[in-house]
Length: 168
Image (cartoon, rainbow, N blue to C red; front, side, top):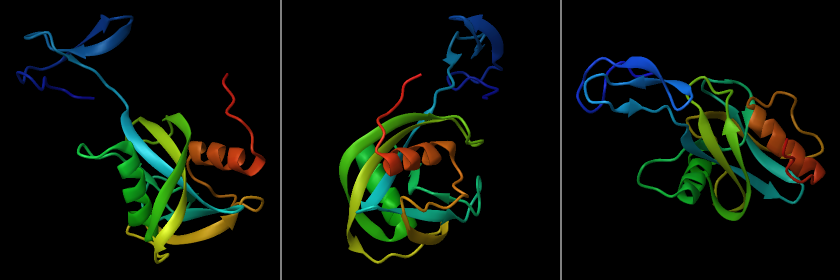
């Protein structure tokens, strides 16, 4: 959480506002809202196989996950998905659909709004990027037990079973 106002530099105070405790500047009144950041993931599919990367970084270092990452300010969420897939797997992917939009709450770095696409590889050489120790195709019926992020596990289970999104 921020300690100082981005507008005037005064120390922020915690106040109840709009039914929540929020950081508010006592000098200029600016509210330092804490919002999730956009992120994109791609379930790169080849028949009943999905491409996963073994994470070389925290959080979940050593666990498998979908190619994913944060959207940059100068790109669309679709461009972010394609870029992250290329950076992490060496493959150029073509997005084939919007699969889901999920809230990420289990990443200690920051909360995010994860937009998950399906895609297929169209070019490139399969090789791990700096965020991955390994990249490999996995049969949807024989997925690794050590998938790191909760949302990746949810997405993979839905892909495996063909289930629709469940709202609770």
